[in-house]
Length: 630
Image (cartoon, rainbow, N blue to C red; front, side):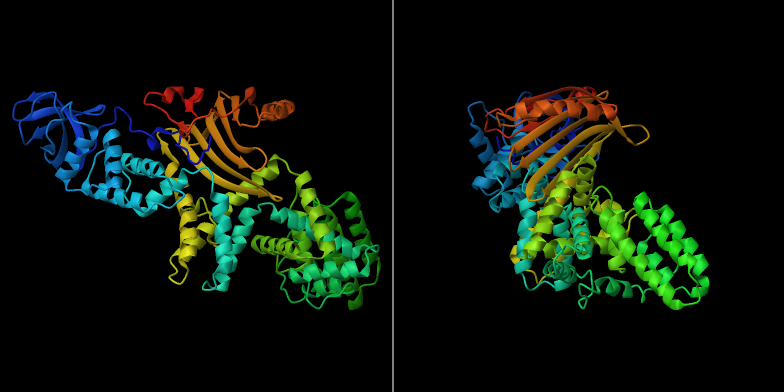
């Protein structure tokens, strides 16, 4: 099986409801059968599962099938017969040719395919939509099949969406269950080669692409920074190794370029002198600035502020707090009439804080020590965006280094992040990717709570600006359009139908050199208060992983009882999954869910694409699952 695309669960994205009133527009053509005739040339016409009553321009015989064209809708529907009655002896090709002649449409292979698909699925036709659909089929990218294109066109007709290029491409790429990772990597490569794009714009997009491709890069960067600082403090580290580590921090713009192994700490302290301090904040950098800019006469007040700040730090160990308090006590015992004592106290406090937070930054489960450490070395990196940018730059700089010391540090940092990987970190990684992509960009624009500056940094608005740049190359434009179509497609294939809601997401994930691409379909219902009903849901995961390759996870939740079906062609997977069932069961139990069963199955061998459908009337059965055909 190759899950190149999928059909969303929700009915409004797949089929027209059988009892949905037929909606026609003037000029449309449709196929129908005369069921009954009434006076004044009125007739009952069967159109698929629908019936309509219309006035006919020509007397017809009950039981005959025709193609009709809507000539008027007000005050009543008026129909014109487009073709004569369909004879049993006529082939489908002959019927279609007759319709092509009547509608004056070109008899190309693409037009015949489009017309056949519309007729087979009983979709209303119009000359404009058929010509547009034919043009799309003639100019498909190599990666898109005609069947995928026809399915997208069908959805546009069923959902009454405008027949625009943006929506067509969005529906095609939005139904893909793979390819997002390669699309992002391709754009990154093309951007690096294109010299026509402004450096600032290119840098912003590339930084966002790096963040998306490596969602744990911040954690790795914090760990790497911690190791670098500890190496500089370590008396057993050789002078050459310290020089190599210091050069890494210089190249990453964390310490001044003129810093040496002997004065790098004091050089970092000097950067605090030029920054204004307005008030004490929960930042080590702000604390140092407050102490540095105070006067000897204010020493007692400063001592109280420092002691309060130390006691409030939840990310420092009791031993570290004790050491800091001892430093404060020694200063408190000295006479306060010399400014040099205050300078010495500031220097020692700065050094102790750097050592303390460098030790705590290796704990990847917390981010505050990492931020505090960076603010002590580079006080302008106090804000989240600056912290993120600096740490990503550190990881990138280390990755480009050929120095053995730096490479070993990065390997150790990667290994520690991997060993600390848990559900919470995975959740954070997924949030980082979705936020970086700009999945909720349009919705966030209407939210008063949104940080507009942060929102503008996400990938989608950046690409929207880039694609309107007339100077970019055609390759960059095409790659940009591909990603935008995927992002738009996720929104088009997501939606709501009454209390039923569906969410579709493509999530490119890369952890420590391992690439995983996941497509998520969530289908559930909403409570009356507008919140998700966590007792009932259906979740499908489509995963493409390096080792396990193609995998599908089908999770059904009914009254907080969970049944999981895992589809994969690896014969040993069931044995590998067995010892993990107990862990999964306990984890779900902690969240007040009960695991009913985990079943591992191979994909059935078939050339038909996998589909997930829901028929009319199945809404009440939603919580017991829907049929899967693989």
